[in-house]
Length: 406
Image 1 (tube, rainbow, N blue to C red):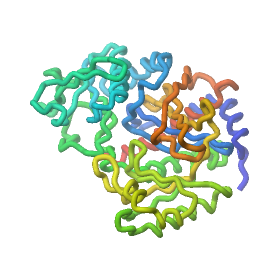
Image 2 (image 1 turned 180 degrees about the horizontal axis):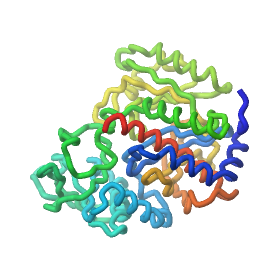
Image 3 (image 1 turned 180 degrees about the vertical axis):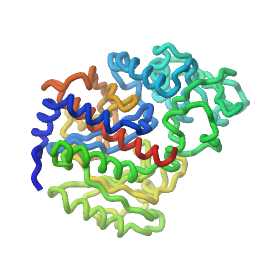
Image 4 (image 1 turned 30 degrees about the horizontal axis):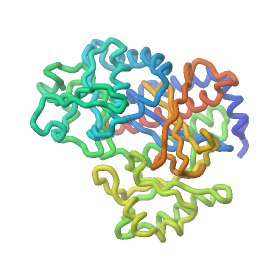
């Protein structure tokens, strides 16, 4: 099949020359959809394509964003909050429970400041009783950069959420619910975004990329673009048990099928469909590698965060990154609020090659000051515009995931 835009170079020129038209199309796609309050998208750029390889509904890492981008993000954040809860004064942030991760605390401090700078009172709160072993009202912590943080014990009264005896008007959820709390979230009147109902106890990467393919294919068809320029090929495989080896042959066949459509020497990522924090990922070049996995690798692929057993797998084309930082392979992570790009960073890993899983031991983050990412698409920032485009399409796909549960 032939397309008007059939190469990466043509795609870059098209985005640069038709940016306003693209923005109008994307805004129309968003209409009526439950776009998550925020999100982040991992993007790989190869010699042939730009492709999202992961989507996070409860992103950490705000501390890795540029100060200038965070300053620009205040207006978008304020508009997003007012759209959801117009009379808000008191905002809550529900964090993950791994509070010993001092870099994560830096992220919380940055996120809190972003919202506080929009002239809201911000409280970090948790329903995890293990954080308050003596039934304290709050705990005080110090982040990696030395910022003091208080985490309040949250409680529910009359279907509303409170922290420090303050009734909260809106909650920003930063807990991925891989270990869900026994709370009937549908009965809570306080608006919570993104919804805890789409946490990793339920969410599947397979579902996300099914929707992304639908969105990307429709976008490509609308502008006569080869859809392979903006997505990675994938297959979903169910009912795999790495402990007993059940389904490994089926998984290996899916690996070989995806590789058969790629150029020689390609690899694929085999990812746990419910995996998070870079867990449950193997990079292989044949189905035989899956079938002959040793015990240690199978154990790594079997169980993830909070003892979630991985039985659904995503077999995803390995997009070889051409990006480098100090001669180390890198990939882009774009952050969005209300489906609008606000900035990002580069994930760099000197222990991996250009086809490796960079979200693993050895990774470091480097600020990527995108500044005014969506304002224009002139030559000097065409790449950033394309990263924004891919991230926004991925976040629209995530809205369809949310639509399934609300």
